[in-house]
Length: 331
Image 1 (tube, rainbow, N blue to C red):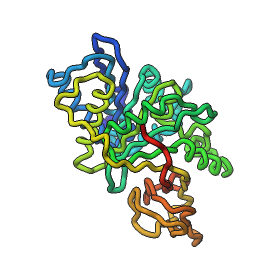
Image 2: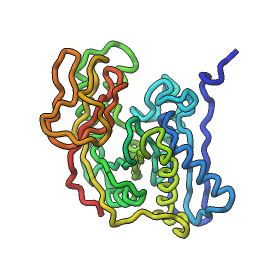
Image 3: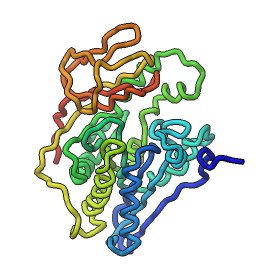
Image 4: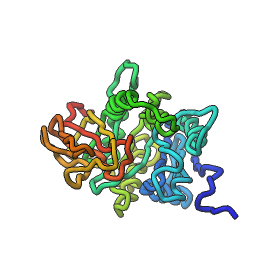
């Protein structure tokens, strides 16, 4: 007899509302990582309001996928068979469950103008938004929607924004490429130059704009409320619903903008942190962040903040990121 908990799901549940007037095409996603459920609750709440008539779509197309990775969600963990939010692209010959999800998800992303991707994180801390690059014609991530994306990031209401994901990840990939491959698919994926591409990076590659909204720690009871308000605020910003009854973010609130500049992988399970770090803890230049298995200290090259410290990271995976103040002007 099969086990319903581990059988691979055979479909995605996708909800779409098509306004009778033309307008933006917004995609809202939750549970790209299966144990990040704030977005699931926020989306379900908006769905109920639309179905009950408490919310009216004025124009455009709203598409919501509350559980993007149903296998990981069923297993109550981050991944099903691999990290869906890395190496996201259409796979003509799918190798795992996440490849099959990507083959269905990528066309939905490409058909949209704007993406709001709802996540959460391991360590305690306030919600924050991750934004893309500034307008540029470079090879890594050319972009033309800096102003619109900044407006979206400001609208969702967090007091902290983080930029520099793909450029920072590219540095880590260069170091991984120098390692001797062990023949495993996991390591092949980690060394693939495309590995830093997730939902938002794929969205920008198709000509749209987006943010990742980290709604707080996984179990934060306020996470679903953060997700819910962000969806409504995004709909107001795009003119897809009326602003009446929606608690909008204060545009004059102080907002800290940080630039990621380094990602450090864990090399051994015996690599240890110097203390119990939380995301955005301040670090001083030269401060010991951790110690390698052989006793080598891991020191901060600059003052700033530590981001996404993961004491449970497996060897070859991201252990933590480093960020410093950004000079980005949010307009």
